[in-house]
Image 1 (cartoon, rainbow, N blue to C red):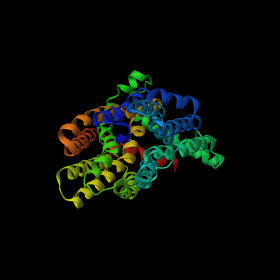
Image 2: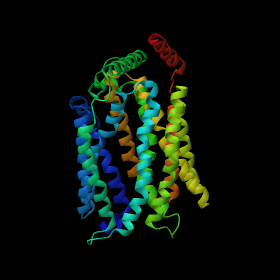
Image 3: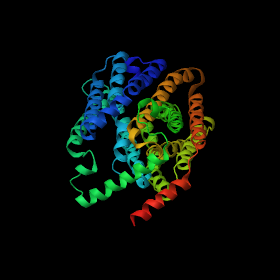
Image 4: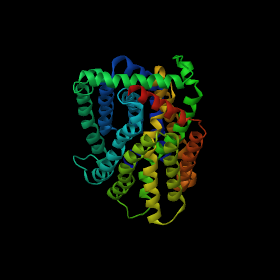
Length: 399
C-alpha cells in the first residue's frame, strides 16, 4: 500500500496517529451512548460502521483517502473496547473478571494467528481484477465485519435480566452478586460523586490511566510498525513469511492469556499480575533491538506477544474493583482515551525515530514505554488483604 499510494514514513506516521484523534474525542460520548441505548444497539452499530469504512478503503486512491478513512475508523471504534469492558462488568462477578477479561482479549491473539498469515498471502497472491492484494485484504476484512455487526443486534442481550437462557432464580442470584460487588467497590472508593470532573480527578483513575497509556503506546506502535520491521530482518522474507512469523507470538499468547487470568483470579491479585507481563514485553523489545541472532530475535518476538496480551485480563479487573460503580463507564472510557493519546503521540514520534535511528531505535523506545508502565503500576497502593477480607465476608454472609 505504501508503494502503491506513495506513502512515506512520515505519511505512515500521520496515518497511524490520526486514528487516535477521533478515537480520543469520541471515547466518552460513545460510552454515554452505550449506557443510554444499551449494548445490543450501540455495539452492533459500531461494528457495522467500522466494517463499512474498512471495506471502502478498497477504493482509496491517495494518502488523503486513507487519512479520512482512519478518522472515521477512530469515530466508530472509539466506544467498542471500553463498551465491552463495561459490558462484561455488568455480567460477571468481580472474582471472575480476570479470566473473563483474558478470555475476551484472547480473541486478539486468535484473530492475529489467523489474520497474520492470511493477510500476507492475500497481499502477495490475490491481485485479481487489476486490483492489488492490499485492496482485497481490506474488502475481505470489512464485509464479514458488517455481517457480524448485524448479527450482534439479534444475539447480544444488554443485561442478565434480558438473557433468555437464564432461569428467574439464576438471574436473581447473579444480579444480587453483581450488586454486592458494586457496593464493595463503592465502599473502597471514597469519591462517590459521579460528576465527570470528580471522576477524572480520582488519583487511582489517573494512575491506572497513565500506566495504560504507556503500555498501550508500545502495543499500538508494535501493531503498526512490527510487520515492516520484521520484513527487514532478512532480505529473503516474503509477505507470506512475515505473516507467518507475526503469528508466532500470538500462538504462545493464546495459551498464556487464559492461564495468567485464571492465576490472577485464584490468587485474587491484580497489580503484579498486570505488571509482570508488561515487564516481559519490555524485555522482548530489548532482545529484538539489541541481539543479532535470528533465533533470539524470534524469542524476543514471542516474549513481546505473551507479555503485551497477558496483562489485559488482570489489568482490566482493576477499574471495576477500585473505582466507583456509578462512574465506571466514564472511568473506563477515560482510561482508554489515555491509550488513544499515547497511540497518537508515539506514532507521530516513531516517524522521526525511524528516520534517524532505524528499527533499533523503535524497539528501544517501545521497551522504555513498557518499563514506565510497570513503574507506575507498581507504585499503586492496592490493599489485597483488605479486598480478600471483604470478599470472604461476602461469601460468609451468602452462606
